[in-house]
Length: 471
Ligand code: SF4
Image (cartoon, rainbow, N blue to C red; front, side, top):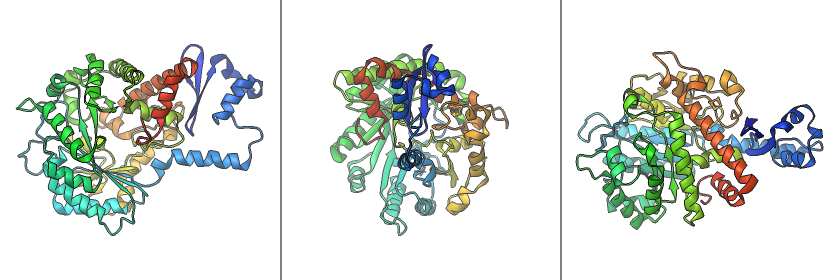
């Protein structure tokens, strides 16, 4: 149950349904549901929030299978494998915790470590695998990316499992030959576009001051060889971005990008030291986010089909039967179970944030060295800690939270936000504050859409489907 406004409350079901009822009906729902109006009872039953008095075993099985479907990401074994072949990157972004200059030595995996990481990927029991190359910029070590793709695609333990390859890159180093190679394995490219040239180039400085131009050239090259939908982009919101939400969204439209991921700045590692200069509050982010989201919706109304990824992920939790597989929003916390990170330093981490935390000296979330058997990694002290501290029932804030079926505490975030070795209460973590604000925002928009804007309701419903199911 979650209050939406003075008169409306949202009832959330763990199977991915939301019903809105009047506050005055709440007491009745708790005390004597049969006394509710027939329309309210119908609504609550159709959304599986009230059980039908005559529920059959078939309906019970349906409910159980919908719960299982919503928990698939957290229960089917590591599906997302992030390989960080190198930290080398030409950029010197102030907010980036990890990158190292192109000539830095000792910031890349060895070929043996890459192959050992691939063996580990194949030890996962997940029926579908996603392998994402991150950095630094992985295209600086295309040789290692190619080595991994070949090893994975032809691995004896693959057992015909589909593998989705993604390379996250600035695309500055992208060549036609690389594109032709990626075409063989249907590799998708993910890049960063922070906004128009003046904003992007300020956020992502290069000595040549042409980061934006080079990324746009890379997008065009990829599209010409790999197809129009081969590149997706995401943006990082900096203090400078906060005043320009509409301009940023418009830039995505101008580039013909039908998805935008409005991501806040991560407060981990090195960025934490610069927080005074670069940081902003969750409230400031939400002000920016609302304006940007309004603009995305406006573009859809103008006939340009566009999806905002963060809204889609939240809506997927709230109103979809199928889980989109977003590892940051799972209950219990799925770091180290649904996702593993094979880092350039030769160690395996439970999440991207955990490897960033390690950059600032906290290596307590290391699961083990690359090459350690999967079983041992999944039983490592770091994995057990996340399992224990990432369960809603073990956390005072989460056990009574309305979103506990869709979200769980983030022990990595609590450690990153803590002082010295003391972690802070979950409700004070960035993860919790941002998640709560985003869920509340989408509940408000959904309630308003259902009440008076059927077109918007249809759009939100479409967004809630897992990505790939259409914008
Ligand atoms: S982390 Fe926050 S939003 Fe998530 S379940 Fe816990 S209390 Fe709720």
